[in-house]
Length: 145
Image (cartoon, rainbow, N blue to C red; front, side, top):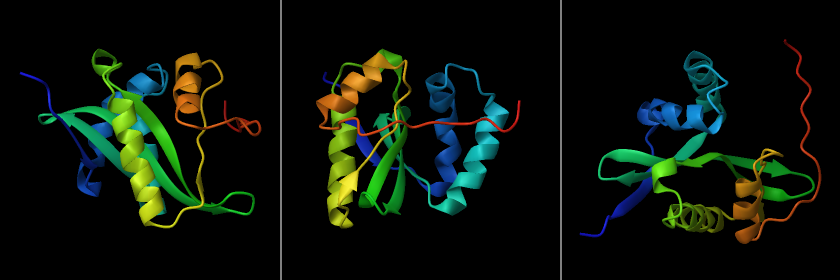
């Protein structure tokens, strides 16, 4: 029997369900407590998340920010995108991107943009295969040690 994946918005009250995958995405370097604290602060700022499910099991996430910037206009930004490693290579990323692009078009976005970790070569290839191209550097300066 072929696996049937479903994709839908994760309700705000269930957003904490993304934390185990976010923990993997961040190479288990950021504690679950810190991730949860940050997520709680992100939700009132408009953070949404697409979930891909195998039955009731959450196997992929794509956070979504709606932004408007002078250089790119109204856009969605996929964030915290990961698929459970056991499910990678099964077209789930493509499914999420189709869902996201449909949403972006529905709400009248001009562009989408994404950040990708410099050392994440697989992620870079994934984004480029979906039409994204590098236009600059994303830099960070840590204020706390």
